[in-house]
Length: 283
Image (tube, rainbow, N blue to C red; front, top):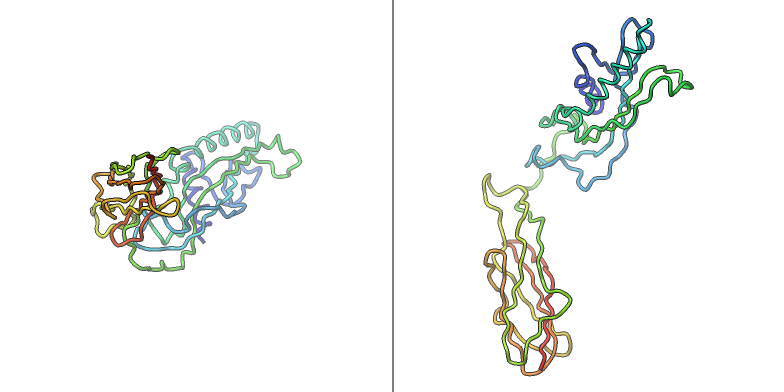
């Protein structure tokens, strides 16, 4: 089971030359200090995607479950006069190790092997209960609760191959007009430009090292605000120069209002709406 492997690996990462951390719950009153890790619960964790991160296996779709595993680290004192002080010191060291990078960031856990059945994202110590503060509890040991954010999947389930994923543009924004419309006199022309943020994250490029595919032109549509259009544009599409598109708007002979609606047309993809620029022809 993948969760059991998280438990075992966490115990290994927390162990020191002076104290080996086992799995399960410690036995109180032994000849030496004892420490162990056990999983006490698993809670679903809301997440946008339930597939492996692309940097792990970028071309192998794999369904996973996003969970928070509650792990309990228990530290028991040995029999004898110094047992209490030694256990307190050991618990202090283990708490500190819970915040060490290999544990806290998940970097000490396997990150590139599907056969492990899990990937740890983050480990957070959330509480430390001492024996003295839980006198009603018969389990007289230090208890450190940890939350382990992880992706888990059955180790026996083979990855599911899917269709090749082409370039996906996931971030796009435009700087269009503000609340006030652009005003043009009848018969006059105006150069109306929009700035477009073309930075994009492309998942699965066509080949390693391929540049991100970017839209090459913008489409402009004149939509009248009223019975008839107050003006026209010289071309239905305008090229993108860097991250800017400029269209020539020619006002008609009478007053009126239009909206210039801008869209982008990435190669081989559906048009992406940017928004509208209001234009008013004022005699």
